[in-house]
Length: 359
Image 1 (cartoon, rainbow, N blue to C red):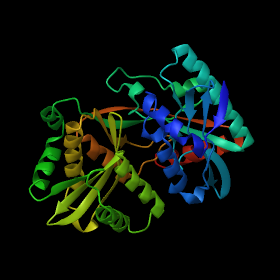
Image 2 (spheres, rainbow, N blue to C red):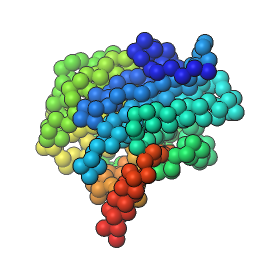
Image 3 (cartoon, one colour):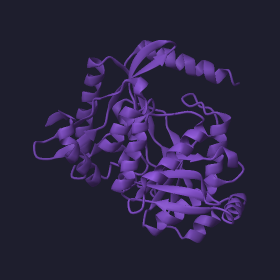
Image 4 (cartoon, rainbow, N blue to C red):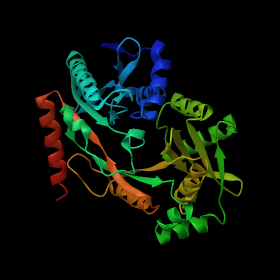
């Protein structure tokens, strides 16, 4: 077995492995890796990604970024993606269960070595429910990251089963949500922009509305260029809500294999009373089903504070609104590992104090 650092010369083989591996989704690709490196330049992210090979084939990949975080005014290095959870490793479909566990043990041992050599103090990983091996429709699974000495810090996410009949999907929605969609459909229309009809002009309108909705520039311009290229490559679709000839909202949905993820979105703050989000999500579900996608991940579910997650009331309300669209709630497996006792104590003490302040 050989461990090889990911360099640009291997990008093609890496992305081909992602297509073939049931463990992998778009988050494992070099396109998402590159985006995450550029998303928050202040974190000074550097790729430490690697793969394991037997000389003739890739057996496993490990997307990995080391970033510099500030905690109480002091810098700390972490394995993370744009300040959030990184991507869990993916293995080859050709491996037996025994072989998979052996490869993963070798892989996580190498992560530990990289952590020591790069003075990393914490690692955060997340499993994508849209990876085919997750098998969303099966019985609940366990968080396999715990086998490799990561602590469970899981959450939940909401998913639509697009194999179901559209009428059943609609009936699973809250009555009020259906009413909002019906009302919005009387004056909103949707435009679906993929690799066949996307134009630079429309994409620039999305970017400008994104800035207007946020009230500021939230990320570098080159990350939008990457998103535009995803649409051109067939890995994303832009949905626009139109009111009287003007765009009042957009959703950019990542599409890969049999799943789709509800990603970047924005709406015109001058039309905040219009349920653009519900309208677009329903139109997205309809289009995805027509294109034979199986799963549509609407987004994270946060109900209240946890020791490892402190959502705002706005985020809790958004989660509740997403549940109104129907579908079902499934585990979003996450794990974290600390390489520094002092840093662990600082983080845990801060979390406990934060949680206690709300009692």
